Image 1 (cartoon, one colour):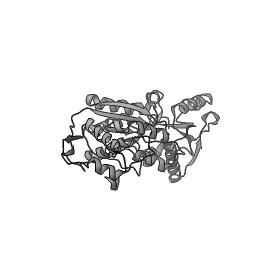
Image 2 (cartoon, helix red, strand yellow):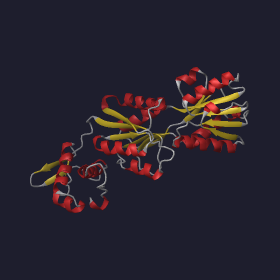
Image 3 (cartoon, helix red, strand yellow):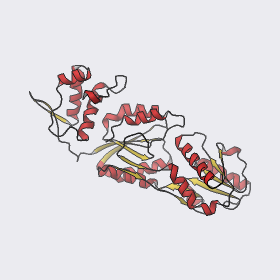
Amino acid sequence: MSEDSSLDPKSKTPIYIQIAELFISKIENGILSTNMILPSVRDLIKQNNVSKDTVEKAYSELKKRGYIYSAVGKGYFVAPINRSDKLNILFILNNFSLFKQRIYNSFVETIGDKATVSFQVFNYNPHTLNEILENNLWEFNYIVITPFFEINSDPNLCIDVLKKIPENKLVLVDGFMPGVNCKKAVFQDFDSDLIAALTEAKSLISKYKIISIIVPTYKHQLNAVIERSLRQFGDQNKLKVNAFVDVTNIILKKGTLYLILSDEDLVLLLLKAREAKFKIGIDIGIISYNESELKDLLNISVVSTDFKQIGQKAAELILEDKNCLIKNPCTIINRGSI
């Protein structure tokens, strides 16, 4: 175990838990098979430069969790894993928006009584996510995460935090994180999907000379990706693209198509349009990001994926113990506001 050991004495996770996690990863990945003998307490002490008490506590935890068994005078062995046991799943959201709620609720509904699902929120902060993982990594069979971070987050830090999760436990939903080994994921391809959706509505968009994207004041990495993709679409179609972060100071201009990322900004922009007596879909165009009942009621065109489908597919990957990376499509729904 010493040649690939990654024990971190500075981590808040106790060393004995780290040792146990290394064994669990090897057992669940089939590297250590049923009834295989494990290193002796003495060997583990030498290999990892830890105390006898630490090793014994690690083996005690593994026995308690049902991963190993002991035979008097013979040592410790890998126990048969009972896959029928109820799963324990931690669902970690970047925020608890309406759309993330839909993913979570659909996931829980699909999982049903096959698992206990807990959730926490890390508010785009990689340090907060790191604390959540250090306090909970040991307790769960699967950890499901929506991997979106603050715009100024160190990408290497974000990757390193996610890498703390054994790949057999990690399930990414809604987004994907290149550089992280992940066997189960249901995600949007934000770079290509927005361009594809706007291209689908190109004949309607062509009547506008300018596209203005309204970015929320609190910017995170996803918003930056959407803005970049919109600018790429603008370059491809010779459309000027502007970006604004405060809708209250915008002076609406005829012949402009507005792409809006938050529901709050959508409401404010609609109020401005009413005040200016602009006709939506004629004087100005509006496309909102992500579907909701409000936008359906107001006849607002949207670019959106099916969030319920994301949650359902992620749950099915776990229930079927299936390793697969699934791209969930994003489409445009035209309701006459373009």
